[in-house]
Each structure stands twice: as structure tokens, then as C-alpha cells.
Image (cartoon, rainbow over all chains, first blue to last red):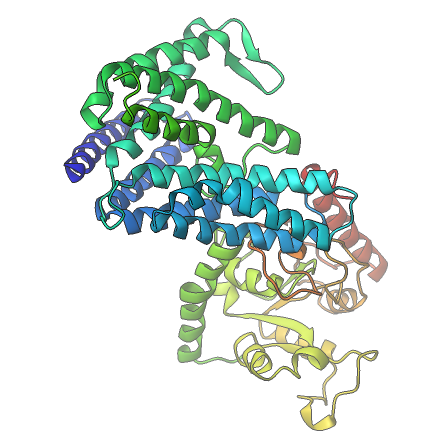
Length: 312
Length: 230
């Protein structure tokens, strides 16, 4: 059942990318004077993302957890390269990297309570201790906050993403692919809807200081379109009902926006455009997964509430 | 630097199969061969120096054709005494050792090619068409800070006025692996390269000033993201 979803979605996504590739090819032929470099790079990166996600889903739990662990590592690496740290914080930086394998081993073993508490409780206490031992008190709050946002936006959110795919049987190697693909698809399509609605009706800026291009009209349009789409497709890929799918779509769209502006705010503060150039045409990993960062952990809780019978 | 086809192949394999994947994983540099340098020597690559990772980074990001002909200038009194590292540096990086006067004395037997001064061996390498990886600051210095340039590069440049010097600025490796630490933190550096400087028709002082300006210019260029680090 689960592998059917993987194969079907892979076929759909690959055909969509092929069509996009064809359109770009025609556009380049029609207007050779215009620069399509960015578009070409973006599409190529999308190929990579689709192939990596779908293959790891196909091969099951181990490969999927390894992939998300690597993505966490790359995200943490680009985050720590950009933020300001004191010299004395080097040990803490090392511990932040160490948190990644630990979190994903807990997930692999299906240790639910430990997995949930790992970032907010265990990691934080270790990091507080490390900062107290190694550094001067001046700048302590900044250092602690920097570490906390870093853990939250990489290890915590992607950890929830990995756990979302686990089935109830801890010995099974199966991944519930629908639970993974639905939030990715909805947050990404929400970005597109927001952009299109903003272009068409955008008038009132929603966060002029952080993202001057985002408008209230774009945000609401994205919210309506994404949740309607979610209501239609959710029952086919997950065990949610139409109503539950609608609520899930609403949550993913609004919190996707929040994650997006959270990352934008961090980049504004640091005076940078992208976190890195790891994903050509898109910027860094964090620039790509920004809308998943807050949405996925909340979606995780939502799915649990649904499976306990809420709104069914 | 004379090297047969076998040694060249081993070098290329080492760079492509070991060094580049390692640099990609730990330092996040994913655009190799993008430093805009000519593919033929002689030339001098002159980066600032903050970390041992600098040398590894440059062998990974220089175009392969250049990397196999690159010889690193390093302190013989320091690297010559570390057993495996010294063998590796001499046989694969074609290291030109510099024995610093202020450093602890090295036993005469351990010195290699003491008959020539470092400047002579560097000059020889340049006339053979080699590429020199020369850190004008001489030492790694304080983490994430530039130290004053030493005169060595200026003497060398003025005796080879036609040889281009490429000033390169690397920011971030002093955070990844500074001089007093053994723990490597995977962090992505920012790399800047400038148009070459030629010593032709210039006095030593002018060359030094031009280099100094090049570094401070590149430092300012990457600075916006570091405005609060002080």
C-alpha cells in the first residue's frame, strides 16, 4: 500500500518535472536573449530532491532516517556558518552537531518520549552546562538562543518529520509515505499559491519589514486554495478524512508561512540573502525547508489527534 | 617539480576521490575548480592563513591541472618534524620548507636541502612553471584575524615581475579549526579571489601596499555578515 503511493507519486512528480523541463526548453528557444539560468538550476535541483526523497522512501525506514539525518547535518552546518558565535562557544557547536545522530537514533528505535524530550530537555540542559563551563556570562543569552533556534529548525523539526513516517510497529521497515509526501507537497504548493495570488491581487503588505513582497491577499489566497486542495487529496494519500484534510491544509499553509518568515527574519538580521549555495538556484537547505520548520511538528501533533478520533 | 604520469594520476585520484568529497562534506564547498586562475603556471596563490584547513581547501578548489603542479610553502621546522605529515607534504604537495630563525633549532640531519635558501627553491619552482601556494602572513595567527604581511612574498615577486600573484581571502576556517584546537567543526567558509597583481615596474613597497589593499578590500566585501562579531 505504502510503496504504491511512493511509485504513483514518483511518476506524477517526474511527469510534472518533465513538462516543466519542456516548457523551459520552449521558452529558451522562443526568447534566447533572456536569462533562464536560475530557472534551469531550480528545475535541476527539483529533480535531485524528488529522486532523493522518493528513493529513500521506497527503501524504507533506514534510508529515510539516514537521508533526514544528513539533511539536518547540512542545515545545521549552514546555520552555524552564518550566525555569530563567540570563540568560547566552539565546544557547544560540536555538541550541536552531536545532537543530530543522537536524535535520529532515538527515532530509529522508536523511543517516543525520549525523542520528544531530546531537544527541549536533554540537549538544552547539556548546552546550558557547556556554555556555563566554557564561556563568560557576557553574551550567554545570545549564545543559548542561537543554539536553541538552530536545534529547533534542524534537529527538532526534521526529527518530527522522520517520526511522522514511522508505522506503529517499531520492527517494521515500512514508511508511511503519505504522511511524509502530503506535508511536503502542501507546503510547497502553498508557496506557489501565495506567489500567484500575491501577483494577481496583492495590495496590502503583511510583513513589510521582513518580506516586502508578501501580501495579505497572497497569504489568504494560499490558505484557501491549499486547504481546499488538502481536503480533496488527503483521503487518497493518508488515513485522514476530507474534514481532517481541510484542517491539516489550513495548519500547514498558515504555519508554513510562519516558518518562511521566521527564516527570512533570521536572514534579515544576519544581512544575508541565502544560507548557502548547496541547492543550486534555491540557496541553502534552510531556504528550501523553511516552510516545513514549524508546520511539521504541529502537523505531527495534529495527525496524532486525528488518529485518536478527533474530527473523524 | 618533476613528476611522472603515475604520481600525477595518484595525485588526481587522491584529490577527486578523497579530498574533494571530504571538503564537500566538512566545509560545504560544492563548486570546485571555480577559482578563476589560468591553467598554466607559473603563478603564486596568496591566501590569508587562519587554519591548517587552508591548504586542504586550496588543493580541493584549484582546477585539477593547477592543483597537481601546486607546491605549498610551509615551515620546515614545524611540519618537517611530524612523521607522516612531513612525508605526505614533501612527496605529494611538493612542499618548499622554510626554516624560521626564531623557531627552535632543527638537527642538521633532519633538514632537507639546506644548501638552498627558501627564496632560491621558490624561484626554481617558479622557473619550472610550478604554482606556489604561499601564505604571505607566514603563520596562522589569531583566529579569524589578519596579521601583517611578511616581506618574503614581495622579494619573490620583485625577482619574478612577470609572475601573477592571486590574492585570495578565506573567511571562516579560523572558526572551523583554529590554531589552538583539535576539534574540527564543519563550517562553510566564504572565499574571495582578486585579479592578479604583477610586480612589474613596481617597487617592493608598492607591491606590499597593493597586496595589503587587496586583502582589506576583500575583507570588507565579506564583512557585512560579521558586523557584530567583535
